[in-house]
Image (cartoon, rainbow, N blue to C red; front, top):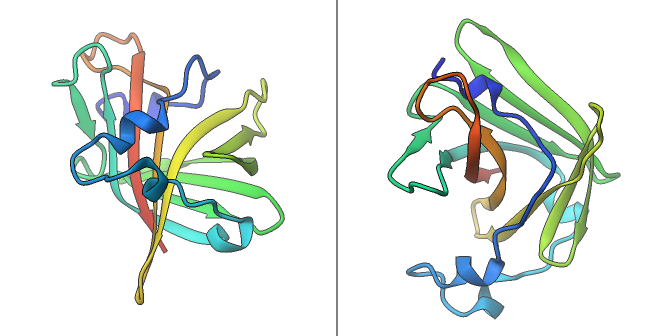
Length: 162
């Protein structure tokens, strides 16, 4: 399974500065990137269209989970409940539950599994006539990039649609 199933929430050490995301090609001005959202806007079930973890020490090392057969589903309830489901054929689903809140530029998730460390996701929420998309960025992930059984810090980039 390329070690991806071992990727799990861990204590946040530092958060990707949202300003750095705005400097990416095509992202435009930071004020255009940050659009405050409410639980009502993101409540529902989301499916990943992009799900990539990258080694911050060596950006050439990355793992595209969807290309490897994984699926990711997120559920945000209007009352603050959160659920993530990672699926891989032939393996039981990895289901995480918790609560979330939206604070400034971040969606903060507190997993139910002890210790309940808060995970921060920088976000971009976009709407169109036919769809909603939510881009989530976090440096609160680990992944075994070289297959040696040791998890290294990882950056998460995912886009989910509803």
